[in-house]
Image 1: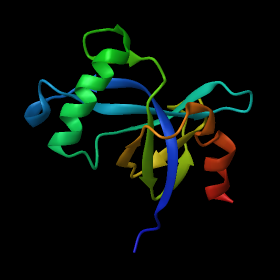
Image 2: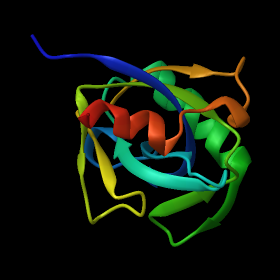
Image 3: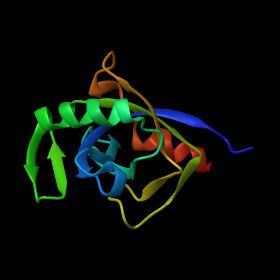
Length: 128
């Protein structure tokens, strides 16, 4: 049985879908709060999304879009999402020095402000 930890993070970007998800915004880029409050990317995921959720997030992130390179759409960091993970691991890919393991979307949190999302310290505690 895999462990399951849940954290609220914020979406900072989203990728154009491909294959069955073409036409939708799919893979979300996730950030936690750093030590000085800045947002630091810690991973990406497209797991756990239903077709209904994909349709909703395509509308939502189109509204929040601030820049795009045609594939990745940067968004205003306003949408909190509850993510389940199995753990974290060290990573040189992401600025926070760690990456989420087996991240999957549980639900979007319109009831939670970005100021209350998980911190890098919260995530690092999983390795200790």
